Figure 1 (cartoon, rainbow, N blue to C red):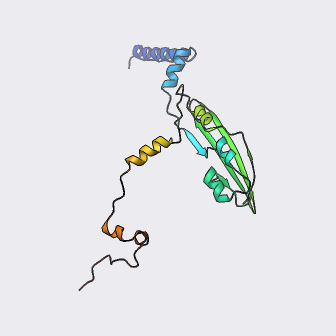
Figure 2 (figure 1 turned 90 degrees about the horizontal axis):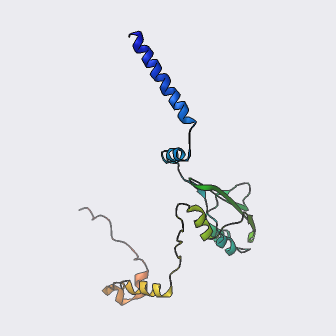
Figure 3 (figure 1 turned 180 degrees about the horizontal axis):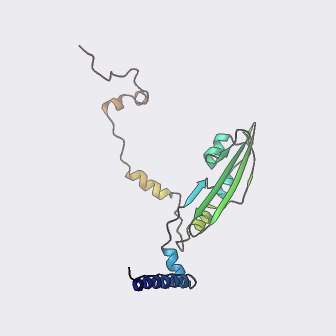
Length: 188
């Protein structure tokens, strides 16, 4: 390769390197916005149980373990060494939302729930508002049906089909048959 071509390639590489170094130092708001728009997707990480203020308010001393589990969900941490303690931990890492971590602990004794302690828990609406940053005014759905809606739902349900066997006795349809027919026909 002639010396002229080599020096031209070196000069072009040196100019490209200088331009890229100069570009790194001149980030403004528009270039930051552009760089953030092409960054790779970050996975949303949600771990644990969301515990709300309403759930905490429903806890009562003396509740059984099953009642607590039905209300709060399965604990994230239940240690073999601390059988009378359940720990509920909730963490969320999401782009555009500050990282959240909440802890809540319930303690049992021989008669049931003894006590509980933990962080201040948000209400359901406060929690929804804290994770919906992209929506300006998030609409939290109503979680109960009005009596009119329930009546309308019941009116739209088809009546249960009855067969001649059902009309003879309502108790016989509730009990299973004493024996079942064979799955395969007998071999002859």
